[in-house]
Length: 367
Image (cartoon, rainbow, N blue to C red; front, side, top):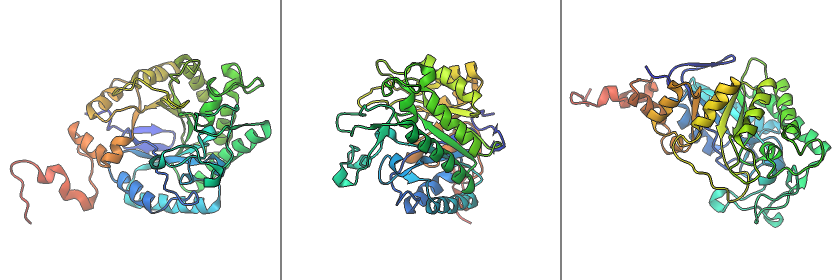
């Protein structure tokens, strides 16, 4: 019996298994709307056997986009396009569908990765960026403007509005991006937050704005639907967040009504190098789960089904998020289940490709 492919209940959301497709930016939206690329990308992933799929980082304001091709959820056209996409995915599969809400902060206004990923100059369509302090992400990035309280209020309200739009579009869950150096993470980290007011200094003060965003979203998002947060286990940067800080943040998130966390790492500043190896974040996630009681999901090179199974079966985590391995093979979950002795249902149209029908010495290929 596989624990990875056993059911999971989070609030009113029932998942058939504990494999999540991680949110992965495609930088292919048009005016913030899902388009042709997303139809094929998400459609292929939806029928691949995972229990849930998290739609990529989606900006709550135009200036919160990482690139010009990022998705947004700040106007009616984007909401309608997303709702149509969600309806399409539901016709394909019973997979649960979530969305990651984000503001790029000092990492916004950049070229797409395949165009170098550097900051956009103003004459190339770039826009003004903001952060907790005027500290650039890297040497070729623009200097962010320090947010004042009016700017923070506008952003918190935008997160809440985007959460309401996600509800209108029919999403099963939302997840706030509080990792990877984006705005909410940059408030948490002393690497990027050097404020001397009530939003900087101690960890309690650095948490103040992110927790206000959580409170606004929790109030705007249906109480019976899950709210999650993705956050770094630590910064791996001198003077940055350490794991003890993350544990304190998780406890505060739980008290604020967050239902699950996804433990990730990286990208608080340009050039940070992490000693990544298969499963390297599992122990951090296990401690979060044990010490806070939060439902915990983990990422981090878990493309080996046996390793992913072991993490869940040992009670270290409640689920795993698979990213790049899913891009390489959208049927990763179907194949992982079979490797673990579980025969997941294949889409009816693909039934004849199920190994139980065509593999083995006695296969008949004719009708």
